[in-house]
Length: 144
Image 1 (cartoon, rainbow, N blue to C red):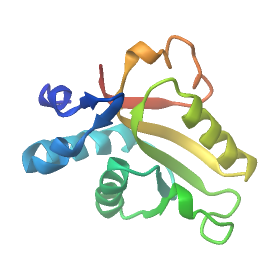
Image 2 (image 1 turned 90 degrees about the vertical axis):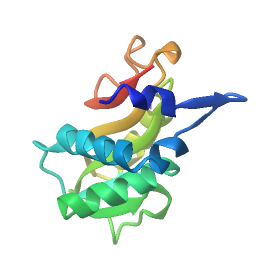
Image 3 (image 1 turned 45 degrees about the vertical axis):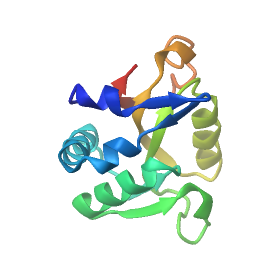
């Protein structure tokens, strides 16, 4: 991942902002290519995006990979039947609790979560250290 991405994650009032990543066409293209490499060996049916910047990234990935994409808040049994293999794309990994809860809700529906991909991981929140997501393969483009 380009070093420049670290500068694209800005914090204010405890919130993150990846909008400068989207605004830089070259950096955005590099990020999409790196995300593609994250999933290039995975066999899956659909991409699930978790809001924010992940909607834009997921759309670009879906186009490049010729896969369907669903927003996490628009999942139904009709558009995501049991047995579907998915990757989950999200903005930022902090503690991992929300991601784990979401993945568990998919698994409760008999959806197979193949991998999770995050734009950025904020290591001070300890998702890796606490092994919150130890059951699920995941990667982040940049770890801060």
